[in-house]
Image 1 (cartoon, rainbow, N blue to C red):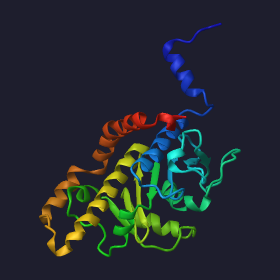
Image 2 (image 1 turned 180 degrees about the horizontal axis):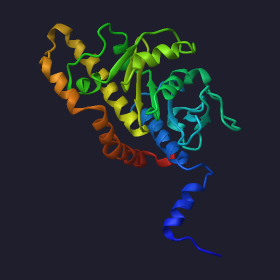
Image 3 (image 1 turned 180 degrees about the vertical axis):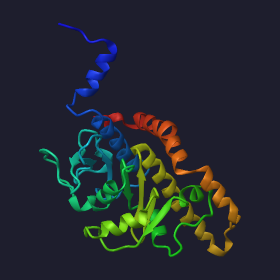
Image 4 (image 1 turned 30 degrees about the horizontal axis):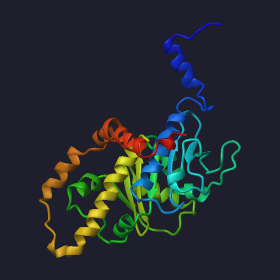
Length: 265
C-alpha cells in the first residue's frame, strides 16, 4: 500500500479529521469551546443563557453555537451544534438549540463578512453599565482601549423580534463591540480569539467603572481630552486583533489546558 509523505499526511489528516469534520470546522469547534470554558472560568456565564457563536469555514452560511441544555463549563468541541442562519440545526442532532437566541448573532454574522465570531454576555458589571445613561466612561486605560470601538443599541425587549436585526446592525456599523442598553455586552471578531479578547477588555472596563463610581462621579479624575484619541490610535482594531490572535489567545488556551483540557473533546 502506498504511503503518504509527511506533508501529504498532514493535508490528509486535515481533510479527513478523526471526528469526521470538514477542513477548518474542527479547529473552529475547539476555539469556540475554549471560549465557552473561559467565560465560565472568569465567572461571566449566566446559567445556560447567552450565546457565543462562530462561523464554520466554507461557502455555506453555517455556524456553531452551544446546546441549550449545557452549562458553559461543560461545553466541548464535539458538543457544539451546527446551525443555519435561521438557527435551525444542520444535520441530525439530539441536542436542543435556541433559535431565538441566535437572532442577535445571525444579524451580525450575515451583515459583517469579518464577523467570524460573535459573543454576548449578561454579566452584572456589563448590565450595570448598560443601564447607565452615560454609558462607558473614559476614565480608565481599559475603558479607553475598549470605548472607541463600542457602539450602543437601545433595548427593545427579549431579542426574538427579527425586525430588530436591521436596527442592531445599523447601530453596530463597523465597530467591534456593543453595549446593548439595559441588557449586556457584545463583541465581534475576525476570529474567536480576537472576539474573546475584545470582550475581555469591555467587561474589565465595565467592572472598573462600577467600582470607581462608588467614589461618586464628582470625585473622578477626568483624563485630558486628547489622550483618548491617542489611546484609540494605539489600540486600533487591526492591531488589537493581531495581538489577540498571535499572543493573548494562545496564552489563554494554554491556561485552559492547565485547568481542564477536556474542551478539546
